[in-house]
Length: 316
Image (cartoon, rainbow, N blue to C red; front, side, top):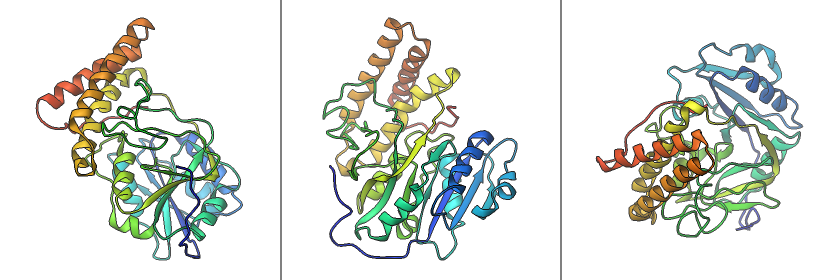
């Protein structure tokens, strides 16, 4: 649903912080911090939470204008790194969020995000940057029907399958938001990333934002634009990704059954995902899709054995 910021709004001074979890991507991190340094409105605090094998503490000296707070966290895990970063917020911060280390912000992105929050409705809890170079969907192998893949852009179907939205031309209200999101301080102090999600943490952003959505509105801010140069899933991680597609989604469905998510429909979607990935792998002679389908099967077997299995690992 396309919306404005809201009618009952507040006018506040926005004191803005970014938490940047990173792992073994020094070139990406340097490019992202360069785009942050070039902003027409700089953030008020930047926290780099480093889970790399070779530390990236160089960023503090290389980007002094950003006044970076650097912390190292091992073993790395995206959810844990995000929580650790938020625990370092200065007292004066009013809004804070996350930036992936592989994004590049347009020059006015931070200004536009701060401007949005300066007059945002009181019931808005989170606002995401507008990704302008496309988005990949974890449900792209499934038919886009209301019962399988959600009724509209940014929705979550009863099956737990999410719909993404790509670039938006006007502010968009959604059921969930991805990692590049700014949250009110009161949200940050009330909600934490679930550390059940290990490693890369596939769908951890869906879990977090859908929890916030129970009490707040979530929006994508059209004018706050960035590009996300996401890395593809490694060939040797397709099996893990396929298993996560089933297990992590089933975990979310169990967690939010009181919100209308359905285990029966989640099982149906898992079987459809298995069929789609394996058939496409065969007909396209695509080993990655075949291995992803095998991972779907492993996830289904794991679920049949009783409950969602906590699985670590990294996809990229």
